[in-house]
Image (cartoon, rainbow, N blue to C red; front, side):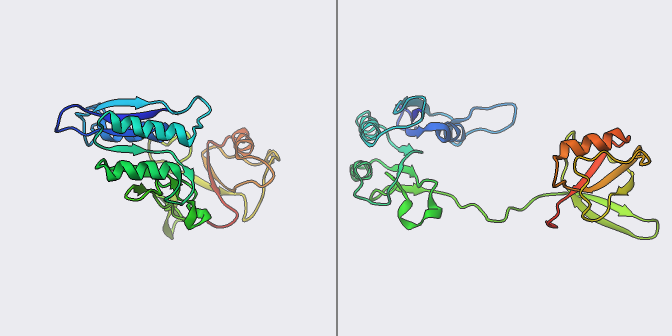
Length: 237
């Protein structure tokens, strides 16, 4: 884990500390230069420095973290941001107290609130729990929306749409195939398909297997000439 400082010496620039794997991500958001993907960071003119606070295992201690904060302050940084901490929730935690004093001295401190919110109110990370420290966090939905591709089925007289998620390899163009259905709640699993089944030019509609992996079932479909599969879950989701 590396403690980064995003800094500048010009008066119209900003300085920031970033830490660890997330810190590398944040550094890119802030100062990414023009690139072939067509985006730039929000402050492309800044300089990037760093303070190392831990070794390869990725652990540090409060005193080392405090030392980095104090060094960053003494070096004249304008903004300090840290993506590391320890579950505490108390403003009196020693690292939180150090961050609070830097804020009182006029330097904004921004710290990740941590990843233990599910454990309750008192699991905010320190030094994010410091007085005047800006604690940053996010919320994950318990149900995640999925954007699906629209398909259409018909039996000659009736047509209807349905949604599906692309697998691998991704289809490069639309295809129209005859549907072969294994039967509702049929677990084909690891069993080879009957030799009388011919799947060439068809798409197999099968439930996600319970007794074997989808890769084995795919091999069984391939053995009968099939090249396309639509899996559906047993729980109807």
